[in-house]
Length: 359
Ligand SMILES: *Cc1c(COP(=O)(O)O)cnc(C)c1O
Image (tube, rainbow, N blue to C red):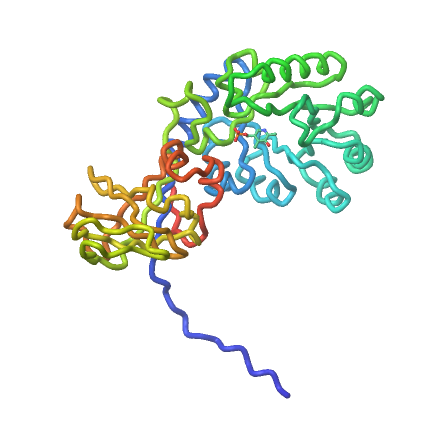
């Protein structure tokens, strides 16, 4: 049997997506500058892992490097490769360290591994040829990082350590564990030669100058997340979600909306059906709780969010028509409260169907 020849379709120009993600580069940089000021004399880096929390790692890195950021954090070597050019020679650290599978790329890459396990330390002694690395010490989160007992055996002797770091478990809370972790890092730092010491993420920066040491590592707050009340008035929204209206309709009193009929109209109600759903990262937690914005009008989500569609009540903006655009309220603290999702989840679930535009 012969294989049919591949079709070579006539070139087509795709229409724009009915979904847009508007990304505010000025807000991103303003957020970084505020975090840098709060970091005092410490350098302020940027966590751009997970594609800059879903917003676009290359675009974010490029803008932050231009603003003066000199330290970037990613999860994997593939993520490091993606941003190296945009980082323009700034330092790039790979938070998950070094697997057997990473040896080849790690020996050739200008990025540094963050060593988390005795196995990773062994691998870097082989692959690193005496080059500098970073080290993550566990001070109580019990996630990634070397235990103090591992370190006490002389595991790190002879390594060139650029940044010795640890990670706070509860920086968004006022609990005694923060000071305990801080003290544990200070104790370790006296025994481990290093060039810089680093502890604070976004929330940790808000805990005050005692937590900044030499280098801070914000992620969430760069992208508009408010990790603690101290940041509420300073941090600006970076990602705005817009969707086009597919259909307008009026539902009569007693009519229900969407799957499982979770919303019943008390009176004749003007609806707009939006081109956005959970496949676009507008998750089911917004069912009957989210809202859209059009001018001054707030337009509540009615019924369940489905895969590609969401209904909103447009009684407050009756001029809206099929084909018009509305903004979904994606102010992160507010959207988190409405949906029950964390601000981190809200960012990283934003989907792939949006047309993305940075200003
Ligand atoms: C993700 C991450 C950060 C950034 O944390 P945010 O809470 O987003 O500011 C900092 N350090 C490490 C080790 C991380 O994994």
